[in-house]
Image (tube, rainbow, N blue to C red; front, side):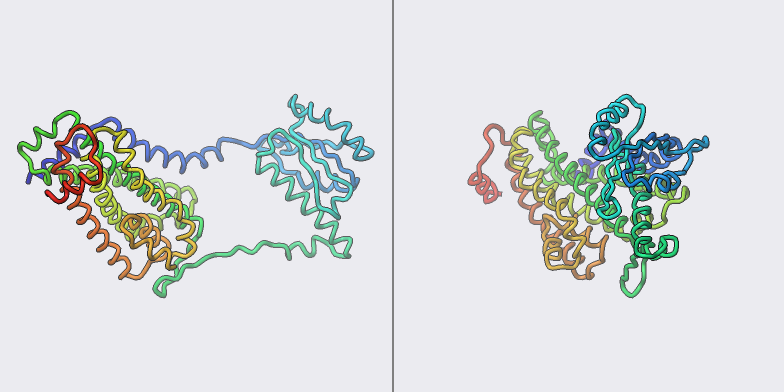
Amino acid sequence: MKIFKVAKREYLQRVRKKSFLIVTLLGPVLMAALTLAPVFLLRHTGEQQTGMTVIDMTGNIYTQFSEALSDTLDDGRPIFNLERLAVADSFEFERVKPSLNEQINSGIIDGYLYIPEDVVQEGGATFYGEKVGNIKTVGKIESELNNIIISKRLKEEGMEYSEVKDLFRKTDLKTVQIQKGEERESSFDIIYMTTFIFIMVLYFTILMWGIAVQRSIIEEKNNRVIEVLLSSLRPVDLLGGKILGVGSVGLTQYLIWGLAALLFSLYGISMGGSPAALQAFSLTTMVFFLVYYLLGFLFYATIFAGIGSICNSDQEAQQIQTPVVMCLVFTIIIPIVIIQNPDGAFATVISLIPLFTPTVMFMRINILMPPAWQIGLSILLMLAGIYIMGRLSAKIFRTGILMYGKRPDARELLKWLKRS
C-alpha cells in the first residue's frame, strides 16, 4: 500500500540523519553518566583533610569534640585537623574574626567553629568557612556537636548518655504496597523518580515527534515537493504515511533507550544497588508505556499535522501550536497531585480527557493500578479522539496542503471542513 511506502520513506529519512543518531545515543550516554558517575566519584575522589579552629566559650566541649572527630584518611592522617583558640568573651571573638577570615581566604584553615557559652541551654553554634556547601563535612560537625550537647543536658538531669543513647535510635519506615491482595516492597523515592522520568520521556518524545510531522509538512509545502507527491498519492495516504513513519522512529528510539536503561540497571545491581530499580522495567510498565506513547503520539501528531497544513512557516505554526503544547505541559506540572491521590476524583477525570490521558493515565498505572474499566475507557476515548482529530486534520490537509500565502482564519477553516 502507498501509505506504507510513505511511512518507510519518512522512517528511513529520519533514522539516517546524524541528528537522530546523536540524540538517540546521547540518551544512553546520559543514563550511563547518571548511573556510573556517582560510583566512579565515590571510588576515585578521596576525602581531604579539613583544618578547623574551634572557639569553645564553654571551656568543656572541645576535648570531647576533638575525640569524636577522630576519623582518619586512607594515609592515616586525621580527617579533621583541629586547633583550639581561647578567647575571653564574645567581644574578643569579634576582634579576632577578621584574622580568622583572612586565614580562610589564604587557605591556612578551612573554617572555624564558634561554640557560645550558652550552647547547652540554647543549642546554637556557628561554623564559618568558604566551603559551607560540603554537606558531609558540615553534617559530621553538626552531628557530633549535637551528641555532645545532648549528653551534657542528660548529665544535668542525672542521666548518662551512654545508657540512654539507644532511646534516640532512628526508626526506619519500610513501605509495602498492597495490590490485589499481594504484597510488594516499595519505595516512594523509586516510585516517584521512575514515574517522573517516564512521563518526562513521554512528554518530550510525543512533543518532539508530533512537531516533526508538522515541520515535515511545512517543509514540503515550501519546497513544492508536496505537489509532486500528490500527483501519485491520495492526501490521506500521504498524511497517514508521515504519521506512521515518524511514530516508528520514536519506537526505534525507545527500543534503544529501553535496552540501555535495562543494562545499566543490571550493572547497578551488580555493584550493590537495590533490585527495586528493576521494578521500573516490569513487563506491565513497558507495555503500557508503549501503548500510551502510540496513542498520545497519534492523537497529537494528527493535531500538529493539521496545524502544518494551514501554515507556511515554523513561526506561524508556533503561534497556533501554543495551546496544544500547554496541554502537554500541564501534565508534567501535576505529578505530585496525582502521586498523592492517584485514585482521587481529580486524577480520574483528568486521566480520561484525551489531551491529558497519555501521561496522566500512565502515571496512575505506574503508581497505583486503576480499575481495568478506567484503563479500557481511557484507551477507547483516545481512539475516538484520534479518529475525530484524524478526520478533521485530513479534511484540512486536503485543502490546506496546496494553499499558499496568507494563513486562513477560523471562518475559512470551517468552509474547508464543510467542502471536504
